[in-house]
Image 1 (cartoon, rainbow, N blue to C red):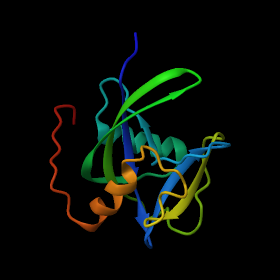
Image 2 (cartoon, helix red, strand yellow; image 1 turned 90 degrees about the vertical axis):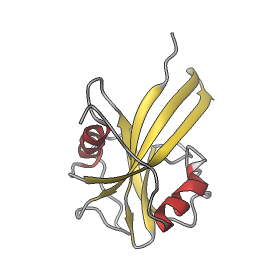
Image 3 (tube, one colour; image 1 turned 180 degrees about the vertical axis):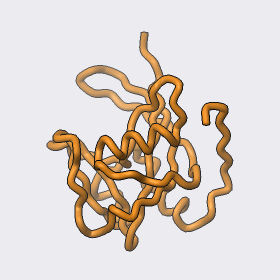
Image 4 (spheres, helix red, strand yellow; image 1 turned 30 degrees about the horizontal axis):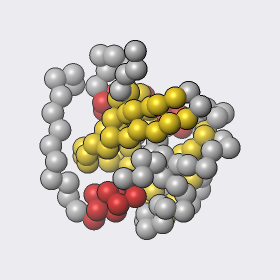
Length: 146
């Protein structure tokens, strides 16, 4: 049975650059983060994923929104729901690319106004991110897990 994956992603901006990641050899990029484990809150999952990927602790801030994403690859059809949060971390800053803790990943600082050239996925984020970063989010977040 196919399922919808639930993923949490974090936005970290420094000097008008946003932290992005990609799998080595891949052409597309995405926001750092990963899957939420059963019984885990989205915020806890984001802190855990960033610690696993980068070896640093982040502070999860505002909930910015949700982006639904689907694509097809060699494994078949994929479908995920991305929960997007703003995050802060004093240990990560542009332009120095962070050293990944997982060998299959690479990180880069990309100008916020140039997300198309790095093939950001889900592509809806190319328009949403600059808007979310310019204004105070008007979305709400609630959870019975936290």
